Amino acid sequence: MASTQFPGTRGVGKAIYRVLSGIPTGALWFVVVIWSIPTFGLAVNSFRGRDDQRNSGWWTVFSDEGGTSLDNYETVLTASSTNSILESLANSFAIAIPATIIPIAIAAFAAYGFAWIDFKGREWAFIATVSLLAVPLQVALIPLLQLYSGGAHLTLPLMDKTLTLIPDFGLAGTTTAVWLTHTGFGLPFAIFLLHNYISGLPKDVFESARIDGADHFTIFWRIVLPLSVPVLAAFAIFQFLWTWNDFLIANTMIGAQRTEQPTTIAIANLAGDYGRNEHLLAAGAFVQAFFPLVVFFSLQRYFVRGLLAGSVKG
Amino acid sequence: MAAVTSNSTREEQVKALQKKEARRRRLPLLPALLFTIVVTQVPFLMSLYYSFTKWTVTPPSPREWIGIENYTDAFTNMFFRQAAMTSVIMTLTSVVLSVILGTGVALLLDRKFFGQGFVRTLIITPFLVMPVVAGLVWKNQMFSAAFGVLNWVLNQVGVESIEFASKFPRWSIVGVLVWQWTPFMMLIILAGLQGQSSSVIEAAKVDGASPRATFFQITLPHLRPYIELGVLLGSIYLIQVFDHIVVMTGGGPGSTNVPLFVNQRSIGGGWRFGSASAFSIVVVVATIILATFGLRVLSGLLEGEEAA
Image (cartoon, rainbow over all chains, first blue to last red; front, side, top):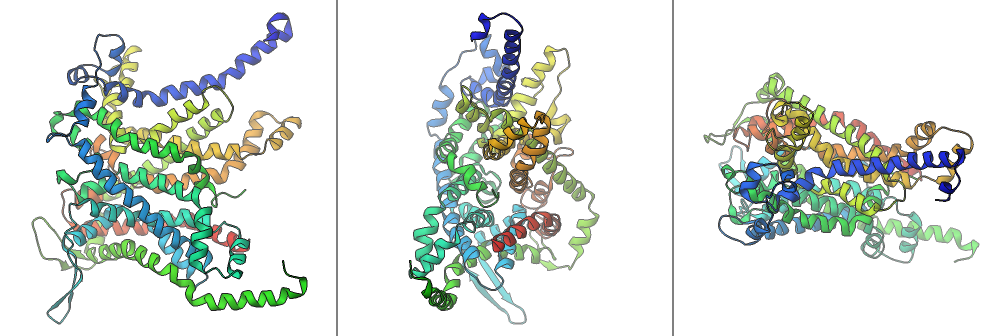
């Protein structure tokens, strides 16, 4: 600025200062570039044809006459028997929406109970629930698959009699099995996160509401839920990302059942099939990532606030 | 509201109301709790039962009770011990590295500058990429000997291409995990930095503290709870890492963690559900012991809340 008009030590000092203070911004842009290379490469490849992708790295697009087109997106977005990304998007929604909303509904109630209702063994029950976070999914997947594909039966010892505890609902290989499983696995984390937040709400509010004759349901519905929007949104983001991007559970429960596959399996299959459709992977990935991006950036302002409230004091 | 004299009656009123409610109190909790127990504890208990049986699905065989045989197998199984080690190392290194990098990026971002929103968006994006795709992108476009960016850079400086994913399977996966989780740590730590009062920092500056001392003696202690939260949430997710490994190395040398190992033994082709259940139970017990730290944090929170 003005310093350039005054040669001398003061100007030099200011110039040095300006260079030094520019370093963080420079470093930041450096990190940003490094961090974005994989995503950027994926984006470039999504516009390149099959042969181009097979024969050269994505950066050659800038030097060679490789040529770009929207063909991959067109193929991915037109449903056909060989590729089913569009159909699988519908399945992904059929999984991710109930698997996000149902745990929130249940966990909010349970978290309120754990936080504000005195009962014997409250802490113990809370710790037992939350410590289930440590269970590797794979343990429970086996019995669950058993449950879904045959119901639950108890054969009484000594008597030759089998009781049907849960009938066979024929859930194996359906999206229902997947979101039911996600709901179960999402609950401990949901209760953990929501409890942290709800237990931190000011006590006075609850007491005055009670004196005014509000029952627990009213308090929960009229006070707790509206106040908990940030943490509900934070959990919703986490759970939506997790269920939308999940491969393991969907693959276990649905596997080769093409009509029920979510996008994750459809995309992973692109890479398989002896690479026949691998050139569609990048375009498919961007179509798949569109929805989590929308969800995240529309709820972003709640995300960190909801995670922090209650668990970090001050 | 009411006059001071009515305070005692008001307290009595509160007590009476609370007693009256005592029964109703559990009511809203019950359905939620019951459902939670059914969908989480019941499968766990079933696994516990299966772990004491010999049960192979393919070829089909009747389930028979064999006592603790599966457990003695689990403890002597060398591959299982390796998988457990891999799980611990992978989770630890990726959490620690992403916290350090995330703190660095958060410090750089904690200023006003042109293009702030754009930069934040670019940095967060990897966190939203689906694990299968993240794994494949890194394998095919970063690590690949033929078309990998890393190898292209190496070639420019005269180093021969390395097929990273097969040469360093474990560290390749850690690299991808760090790429995806640094943004998350950055978000949490940035919130911590922005919650720091500027007057404290200015006071330190006036007192002649160096930027280094300010960081280590004021900023870092302030960030501690935020870092702890990041470590806790990161570990919860990273201990379950599975998709990345399947697509990148398929569990190649040194990259089979516990979820992958259990999966291989059961639904992934081994079909020995009895012994796979035993492995999982061992993991659960071990994790619960290791997580005592985490639980202590939890109970600390509970106590703190009661004291308040």
